[in-house]
Amino acid sequence: MLPKGSKLYSIIFLSCPRCHKGKFFEANPYKLSNFNKVKERCPKCDLKYSIEPSFYTGSMYVSYAVGIAVAVATYVLILLFGLDLSLPTLFITIVVVLILTMPWIAAVSKSIWANMFFKYDKEIAQKIN
Image (cartoon, rainbow, N blue to C red; front, side):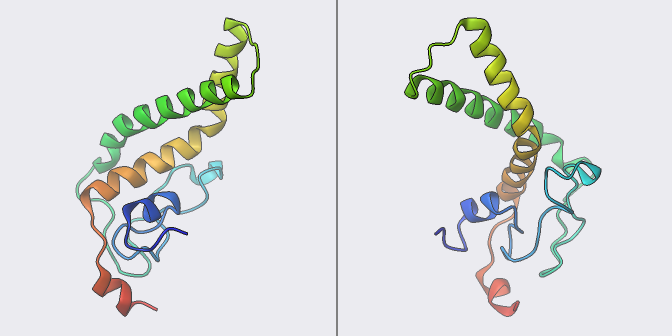
């Protein structure tokens, strides 16, 4: 299991970058009514998740990289399973996987972006129960 205090823990579990205990998003990324909506503040440590207006616009660049990683991983898995797909079928398969993982990619990208600007604070995390 990943230890609390690592950025990877916060990214994978979509938790607060500072305390790793509060939820980062209003709801599950696949709940389309609250699609990709970041909470204003951490419910545990009261960290304001947005430094400035349009703070998460930069996560678009991160989502591009995460999307490419998902596409490459899909292609590698197709090769590892020995599937002999034609080029159009391969393309359609990768596009379908990208569409299905789009909410997750967007959520993880925002979490990565926030973790680039906020760091884990062990003292605050220990004060919170």
